[in-house]
Length: 531
Image (cartoon, rainbow, N blue to C red; front, side, top):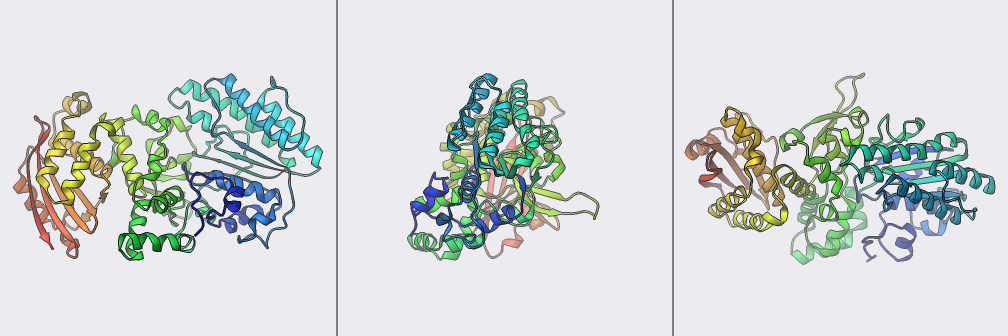
């Protein structure tokens, strides 16, 4: 078996090191086969953007031997082009002066690669960029390839401070505006990042770029398709299924639940590539994508915004909503979609002239746990380090169907919530439905953080269950009351048939009553209805 490329994003290192490469060159060919191409693509972190940039770099350098086992090998002319590759991932943007120096340093590294004289250190980055492009074009008498990775990183690093973010954006806007004026010298341009650029952003002057972020032709360019999972990881699938003593179909279903579900056009789905590779390496399910580094700017963005899970799930958005505002001013659902915690679960076009509409949802368990952790901390002031033991007890109690221990663990978490979090609830006329909505949202986040599949918007012909959980073939239906009656809650589950569609599964009904004054579960009853 080929080695798994953990932490390796250089195409040459992957090929020469006998690492596994999921062949994406058929999609790449669609981008490069035209005489000229100017593209922009945004994707969440850890989705293979850097590997894509690296693959294009070696392709345009004409290193055909590296591609001998790929789809594109006998379809490309392998002509060599002078190439500029700029990666802003590790750029220091603490101040505007530091960012300018960092950009100059990156340009000088490229000048060295192209065997061009160094640029003066005190030069403005935009002037230096123009100089590098012009000199490379003159030296090689050939149009250039320009590849830019993580284009907006300095802005995201300063998202908490609006004025500073604007300052970084202005520097980058001047820097990238050079590309418009130098278009005649460019054969191919690809810019990648986490967020889509807006009409007034760093690309305001670059109106000739083709944004393919939502383009169905490139929706599977990054991430793994189901076919790719079977084709390239077949041996790893068999090995892992054998370890656990289950069928490959059973294993694949679990991998789907944990790592599949991302869609960038509302139609085609892909697996998170980083999480899949880590899973096959460790042969253990875990939240690899979220644990890889939930960057600080996500917490900084959400901390001062009142976001509830109900407001995010099922939200309908259009492409224009991703480009009308700067990232720090955008709505939470747009921000969370771009950062990978939400994705398009479906799409439709209301009419021929209407814009395409996308419906948002959580892609998989990995993202669900991550979103739960982020919202529990930013909205409920509950840090994972403080409640992890309690969440573990919730998992153990539900797996053992010891619902009394579940009640104790949930109450232990509720005791950690400070008075200030209840905020508006205490200031209003104390409507019971507001309390029930508060606890319903909180419990969904806790169960999601615990790794249970929380089914959203589950309706029957007679109503909607408050909380519905699935795990390992077991279904748990929860009806929640505040200052109510658990018997009434249990009867409501039965009368409205919240459980009836799960007759083929092991199913439990749980009725919960919470005291608004004591802020804890004071009653809990449960029944098993299916074997």
